[in-house]
Length: 276
Image (cartoon, rainbow, N blue to C red):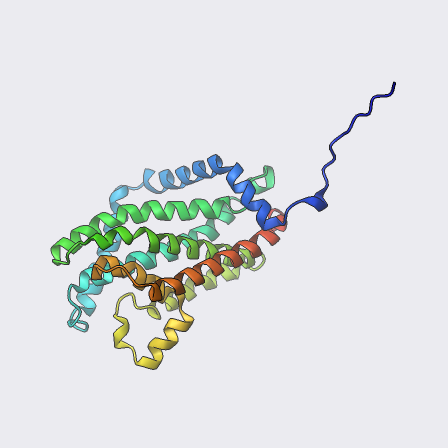
């Protein structure tokens, strides 16, 4: 009697699309990503003289400079220090997290050549590090709110929503820029210049009301960070939960950016180990 033995054969043609497969691998390697996040946080604070305090002092120092420079220009803005700090926190999270996502990919180039690891792991770790830093930065923000007599309301509990949207947008932008920076390194340098211009085109240090109506409408259409900064600032500075009319544009843009960035990055990820 001949025994039939069925050998399982791997068929690459039956593999799920690369972006879906990457998502599965991220879940599978979730503990490794947690270790990358831990490494990034420890590296950031281990050799710092001020340690965690630097994360809190840095936005406070920037806020102080901007308050001295613009408080008289925007003297009609009540509690300008709290206004500008809330906007700076949202912007700093986006700029630092998206930049770190690009840098982490380059840093992990050697590891990608040696062992298999989900290519998006480094970007996810960068976003996680940004969330940790943002959590520490909330401490001086509360102090500034109390000093400027801006009431802290229950709307503060809404804050996780804009933070989640900022994380989605930062991850999407970071992955999208990385997809091109791996082929054209100058893209990463150009991104830093774009960030500087982008900040001044976003109502971070000035209220959107100072813009002419046509310019404000143009910014709303072309600048997704307008919605995210306003969404982040509303529960902190205004003590209000934004309405659906302010939430849905941010939700739409952040979801599309993340999906597009993830898809473009994952479809090119197989070539990255050879180009880094």
